Amino acid sequence: MGELNAFPTADGSFSLHSEHFDEAFHNSAGALNEARVKFAQPAELTRFSSGQTLRILDVCIGLGYNTAVVLEAMPTPAPTVQWWGLELDRRPLELALEQARFCSTWSTSVLQRLISIRDHDGWDQPESRGKMLWGDARKTLDQLPQDEPLDLILHDAFSPGRCPQLWSEEFLYDLAARLAPGGRLLTYSRAAAIRASLQRAGLQLFSLLPVPGERRGWSSGTMAVKQADINVVETGTGWRSLAKMEQEHLHTRAAVPFRDPTGEDEAEVILMRRNTEQQHCGLETTNAWQHRWAAK
Ligand SMILES: C[S@@+](CC[C@H](N)C(=O)[O-])C[C@H]1O[C@@H](n2cnc3c(N)ncnc32)[C@H](O)[C@@H]1O
Image 1: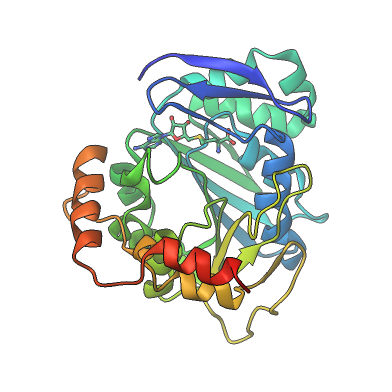
Image 2: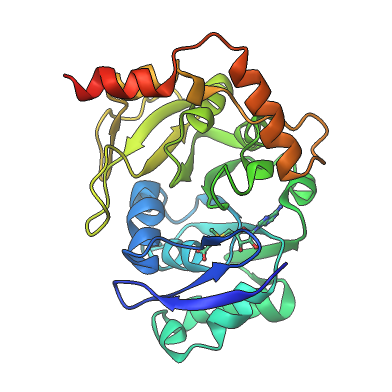
């Protein structure tokens, strides 16, 4: 799986760079900052209270930041938590837990859960249970119970260009199908292909607002919601409805999905398949879309 090299991010939190994927685990603006703003904040955990069960799936737990910030943000009194994690590589969490500064970021109870994930593949307490599923997320996702719909999915795979296996239309459909009514899938990706797949999967799209300290951009990610009786408000803490520019992005070549019909293809095969489909799709080029909006 290649080497993992540590690097400090701008908020002082530690992250890793993967040699195999040739990509950093977090942006340089701050691993902790990114986890809080893109995952914990739009999760709006105050929606849940004691007596309810909150079911969470962390796709690509890595060093554990997203799970840790979400567990730290739990309201008091807390709901019952059922957590699942998917991850291929045990090393990122092991490396994180060797860092004194990483460990001191978390409360004792959250740190204990991260340690239990590393040492016991999860934890089991009366009000909180966690189950870590190691392996290719395309396979381990099947081990989640079908009858326990998820309230929150944290999707934090490497970028679609590096790890298209976890951004395929098929994988995203599987995730969407597991969401409870009102359930939210959160990701840092604002890619048109990902958004278009999530939309076709029946989810309503929202744009995450740019994160303080990050390079300025039109969006810092996506919140995709399985609609319930009560609609999600158009603007909330850290998100808004898609702008017209973003909606039009979903009708350009960039929106051609990543396809992995058997759930077993290598990255190169998925990327080549998409490339061929893009050449024959007849959609507006993404450059033309960019120029059109730059001129406005
Ligand atoms: C961007 S990092 C995740 C960062 C993490 N959420 C955190 O807070 O530290 C992507 C992770 O995806 C994992 N990964 C790559 N391919 C995978 C696969 N097919 N199934 C499961 N995990 C995978 C990598 O090992 C890596 O830990």
